[in-house]
Each structure stands twice: as C-alpha cells, then as structure tokens.
Length: 477
Ligand code: NAD
Image (tube, rainbow, N blue to C red; front, side, top):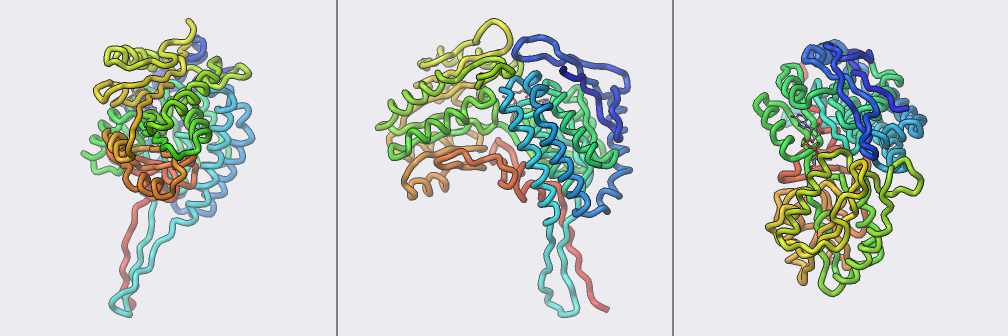
C-alpha cells in the first residue's frame, strides 16, 4: 500500500544513476515501509540540463496557458487527496484528516498561484521627455533549486512549486527524505496535468550533496529552502557566494500573549489546536505562552484540560488527534530539552516523556517557570511542548517576545483594539495573528524576519521571489 519513490527527471520516473536506494520508516510503528531512490550528481546535472532545454518554451508559453495547467493540477490533487492522505500519514505520522486537509489545501495553493501568475504586472513610469517610454517588466528568474521539509511533505513543496511555475521558472525540488512518497504523488499530479518534461524535477538523496551541487551550478539562479535556521544560514551563505537569490523559511519560537481582557475560551481553543497540530512540528506553532497575572491560573488550567483531551495514537486510527513525531531524531531532541528543563528548575505540569514503547510518540507537555537560561526558552522545540510564564505589564510580554533572534509568527489575545494595535506594532515578527489563527493561507504572505529568514512562501510577495524586474527605456524615433 505504501509506494516506493523514484526520481522524477526530464519527465521520467526512474532510479538514481547508480541504483542506490534508502529506507523509509513509519514513525507510528518504527517499521520500514518502503524505499526511495538516491540521486547521483550526474542525475542532478541531468535535471538541470532538462530544465535548461525546457525553460524557453515554458517562459514563452505565457501566464494564461501556464495557469490552465496549474489549475488542472489543482483539480487532480483534490481528486486524489483521499488516496494520498494515508500515504502521508504512514510516512509522516499526522492524523489522516490532517493529511487529507494538507493535500486539498495544496490544491488551493496551486490554484491561487495559477491566478496570481496572470497578475505579474509591470509599470509604466511617466518620463521626463514626452518622446520617451519607460517600462518596468517582470521576468522569470530562471532555474530554481528548492528544498522542502518533512513536516508538511506536500504543502511545503506545493508553495515552492506553484510559485516557481506560475512565475515561468523551471524548478528542481529536493523533496523530504523522511517522507518522500506523498510529495512524489503531488509532483505526479503536476506531470499528469501537462507540466512539460524538465520544468519540474524531483530528487532525493544526501541533502548536503544535493544542495552543494545544485547551488553551485551556474544555471541555477534561485534557491528556496524551508527548514532549520542552522541549515538555512549554511545554504544562504553558499547562495550568497554565487550571487543567487534566496527565499529562506526557517525556524520560529512563537510567543503567544494572552491579556487579561481576552476571550479566554477562544484563546485556549485556538492555541491548543495550534500547539498540538502535527505534534507541534510546525514552524509557526505557539511555544512561549505569556499570560497576564490575573488570568494565568485560568488559562493554564483550561489549556491543561485541552492538552489532556488530545488523543495520541497512530494517525491511521479513528479518533487520533495527535500522531507520533516524524522520526527518532525528534524524540532525542525532546528528551534533551526535558532533561535540561528539569535541571534548570522548570515545573513539568503535564507530560514530559515518551508515550508507549513503539514508534516515536511524545506526550503533550506543559512546562512552567522556566528562566531564559533554559534551552527550551531559546531553541525551537519543534514538538508538543508548551512553555507557560506570567507577565503583569504588556511591555514585559513584548520584551520577552522580542528577546530571541527568531521572528516568524506571534499570537496575541485581547479585546482591546488599542492593545492589539500596540502589540501588532511592537512585536518583531513576520506574522502576527490576533484573537485567532489566521496564517498560512495561499493568498497571504508567509515568512519571517531576523533568524527566521527572508522572503515569503505565500501571497503576491512569494511570486516576487521568483521574478526579476527589467527596466526598459525607449526613445520614439
Ligand atoms: P535538520 O536541520 O537536519 O534538517 C532540516 C531540513 O533541512 C530537512 O528537511 C533536511 O532534509 C534539510 N537539510 C539538512 N541539511 C541540509 C543541507 N545541507 N542541504 C539541504 N537541505 C538540508 O533537522 P531535522 O532533524 O530534519 O529537523 C529538525 C529541525 O528542522 C527542527 O528543529 C526545525 O527547526 C527545523 N525544521 C523546520 C521546518 C520549517 O517548517 N521551518 C521544517 C522541518 C524542520
């Protein structure tokens, strides 16, 4: 039932040049469920050569025809969502309903960029001389090397592929080795919808070998990466040395500020959903829960109830609301964080350890009273851990929110529009969501500042990242 994954190069599914493969495991059982093909550097060169051959026609095709192909792909993705979801759950762990929603949402991403590609307008700039016409036009940046992670195997790939193709660029995607098959099924939808051979290639293998080779390749003009800040800095440095443009969607450590005038029930419901979805393995998951004194006990008590109601289990089982972590590396990371938190005097209010003996399950965890010297208060947990602390004045909460070098997502809850305005203005973050969870839609920007990266994975800003502008001035003679 779980398919092996091949490379997709020059319009063909095929093994890697030296036929090497690597295993894929189900994080709920620890069992090997399949294998994926490993690309050689020769395969990567072939992907680039195919992209070079296909680029001129794709560029010349124009946005309307490209849009029709992308919309057809969106339809295929939605049609196949029910079949793709179990594959994603088997390799990644998330509950089946979350997998299916991710796939259908990725259809929405394709559709939105299909339309936005048609609106990549230029400008006409009034000239000083009446005989001169001054234009700014947009052009596709060229061949894209993209790297997408395992936490959202389809939607993270979708954002990069949709924006690149809509802009008129070829893209070579290194998919997530931990979760290769659902990403490959998504790419198949695009191939079946008529994306020409060479315009979209999918490779897997050793991440460092692939990124070193593709980023250094003279024909690759743009790098897009989603993953940890450490790896992002490495890749951005390599791209910078070659003067190549990047979109970097990196780690976060989201503050969630709950003021004493907030709708507490709504705040807890929103935050519990956002914390435990995908077992907390989301760059925009709320992490530092900063609650105003007067309502601290109430909010913590209600959040604890919500965390206790989370049903941990195999994502394929009915009723599961939180699956395992995606691989053993995350369990090791959680255990390291918890050992440090205990040493630094944190009070483990709920959870704090592995759940069960098979697979990579971890309990929904709440920790109180950690100081800023604790690792968890500085490093992205990327797991189901909520850190609670209290504040009395809003300025304190803002200072804590801005203490870290991360700046991806932030949440705030208050009924006062003046406080909401103040918070939205003073929090250093690429995205601020007030009184609800309203991020990650195809039509809105999605990106960070500071160590969380630059560029956007959503909205018109995302398309910009795959285009260059050209200024043309013409004297009428
Ligand atoms: P990791 O840092 O080894 O890898 C993170 C991602 O980067 C993976 O997808 C991996 O394939 C890729 N990667 C690693 N080295 C690379 C290289 N040299 N070239 C190209 N790609 C490379 O860590 P991990 O154990 O896989 O994930 C844990 C951390 O990654 C988390 O703590 C989290 O901060 C981060 N992460 C973030 C996101 C996100 O949505 N921003 C997604 C997944 C992982």
